[in-house]
Length: 152
Image (cartoon, rainbow, N blue to C red; front, side):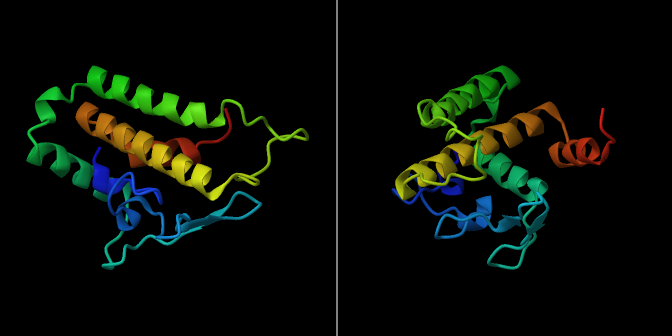
């Protein structure tokens, strides 16, 4: 949900690259260096800025068009999101950490497995943004405030 926002290479869903920030070859449009610094490409193919607010609005419209809003209580969304987190966790369950510590990225994973991780991360993200929207939380603003705060 919504399916057009999370497509994997396997074709499980429909088009998604301009909504999720993943390109057609399933790579993030944000690049993160070894120093952890990111340099995102914040525009979609149509030139619009890709922000949490834009994605939230699209998800809200998707739910509203289908009259799903009455079912989108915080509790229901959290339970659905936990199901998606479980599916994501299952992908990592027996992979191990590679011995010498967890490597950055998914080195050694098959293209199909990386695609599946991408799909599940998109699903979790969509539910998270919908939950924040239903609860009246500015997810982007809160995340930026936490990221800018000095170490606790």
